[in-house]
Length: 417
Ligand code: EPU
Image: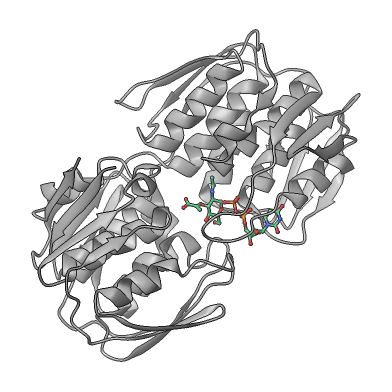
């Protein structure tokens, strides 16, 4: 199993290019099931979750290719299976994104029910309730959701909780349903808007994406298209914290700073200098880091996917920061590993109290999920001596060549096979 070795203490300098967003590419790949025509995607990040989705599509008989330069071609003209098996879903919950498109086009889908994961229970009840409102029957037996529909009909669907993949699944189901669907309390993450752009390019009629109410008028059929995946705002934010935590000076290129407003505002508040450009931004870190509280909320607020990385930064703060996680009930697994590196963090339910000012020292640590892994890399960059991060497969699910990109900025970091 691969590990990452980091020797801390080097300020990062230079320019880094952000890859495509995993969480935008995954629904885009699922959406290729909505048409028999060819779909060409650009800017797909070459990470493990993408390769898992390619395997999933191939297992359904879809012609799917993804190359390291980010180009992908997909043709679902004659699927041979309408099932997402347990073996794949258990490694990547986002497999559940095929449910909406399969049901919309073939009126039938069989998808393994994802279990809980390292960050929380993560049920899919809202996906299923929405589909049922549209006329589907969803039965859960033997660990699988068997969904069928004679026809999907437009419906008014109000979601109790803002769910990103839930919104995406229902949007993909609604584009081929009869009549109008309204998704209320919808997620307005940029990844949802990017999916809506793709669906419109395929001929779908969607309005209101990027707001809490999305209105979709179903069409009879969708066509092929060419679509570009947006840059990964979480990868960009991770590099921003890398610059801040090492007191470096990094230009983060090829991303949309507007997608990072809450993160950059927070970094500015804690003392990093941010200058915005058209297609990127620059972060200059300083020795003085102010400890500031943060609470995660759905977009456009501070994202849960940046919480672990921010916690690493707060270990270097000048006081106490309270980090409140409102999205996932168990997303503080990195705290105990950061403690092994000398951090002073107390977790109480949904809150972590981080007392800064303690120098971090390198240690052997274990990654528990994707963003927790990133937080350990960041802590390693700031720590004295060597940090070895185990279970790097979590990192590989969503970060494209992170060690090479960090090394390009002057970090002493390598992958150990
Ligand atoms: N929820 C329900 N019922 C549902 C769906 C969600 O109760 O049917 C709850 C969840 O348990 C959670 C909250 O709603 O408490 C929000 O979850 P959401 O459904 O938005 O999460 P997701 O769609 O499963 C996506 C990202 C995550 C990101 C979250 C929140 C993808 C593929 N995944 O997950 O990304 O943390 O939204 O922004 O888009 C990551 O990239 O590391 C990652 C975990």
